Structures are given as structure tokens and as C-alpha cells.
Image (tube, helix red, strand yellow):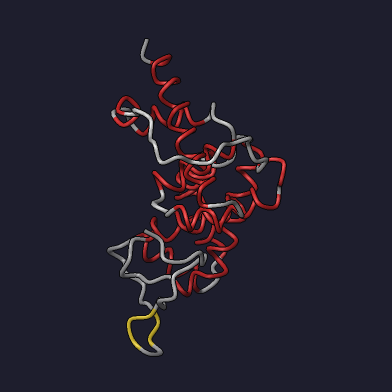
Length: 201
């Protein structure tokens, strides 16, 4: 579960004090990252192409409009190239990249208030709906149905169920109350359950 909302990890891309990460011919990904840290335009383009589909899929989970998602993808890679020297090569690169992409998507949603219209809600009463059916669906099925949810429900569901954020963290990210975050999650699951019944008929 995320401990903070920073875009990048604090750990350096070095093996020891003052020692740069060495290029590794046996690991193409690390070699590309190493060259990106040296500001190689060629390798930045290679990294972009290699992970474009992965980042776009993440952004589409938060941005219903593909044009906006493309802008978030571009913002993500700009931040990646700006901060790649802080990447810790002992950790999975895709996890580091995903964190940046999610934060960029949330930043875009906060900037573009029309996507963050709050829904009329009643206070969360602690009762969860029966969502066993939703829980048995594949991630691909859920992503298809998520596209039919109101933007805020989709974002809260993604942050809580997929990214592992707490309701307190979601509330801070989206500038809503914790009880609202819980309510949006419940509503998202209820709607997903209805959609699942429709999809599985």
C-alpha cells in the first residue's frame, strides 16, 4: 500500500556512493534505463515505445477520453525522463513507472474539474453490498465495465481495489471526505454488480 503521494522513489539509481548504474548487455531494459539517465534521445524513444501500451492502459483506466489519456501518457514519460536518476534498479521498473502514471492521471483529473464532479451521496453506513459476482470477474471484464461508470466512481474503485490506496489516501488525493470515498466505492461495486449481471446474461 502506498505510503506517500510522491511521483518517484527516493532511492538512487546508483550501486554505491558516487558510482553510476552500469550498463548491462544481458539486461536490455536496464541498459535502456541507463542510457535514458544519460539523456540519450534514442533510448528515451526506445523506452517510450517499449512501455507505451502499458502506460496507455493505466491511463485509460482513469481517463475515459483517449485524447486526454494520451496527454497523460506524454506527461508520464516526461516525468520519467526528468526523474529517472532517482529510480532504484533493485526494484521493478514497471511498478515505479505505474506509480508515476497513476499520479499523472490523478493530477489531470484534479486540473480538469469537469471530470471530478461529485455525485449526490448519502453518508456511508458501513454496510457493504453483496458483490461476490464482481469479485469473480477477470480484471479484463472489470475494466470493460469500469468504462461505463461515472468518472469519480471509476477513479475511487481503481485507487482502492487496484492500486491499494487507503480511503484516507484517496480522500487526500481527490479532496473528498473519507466517508465519501467509502460511499463511492460501495456505489461503484453496486453498479459493477448490475453491469456484471448484464454482461453475463
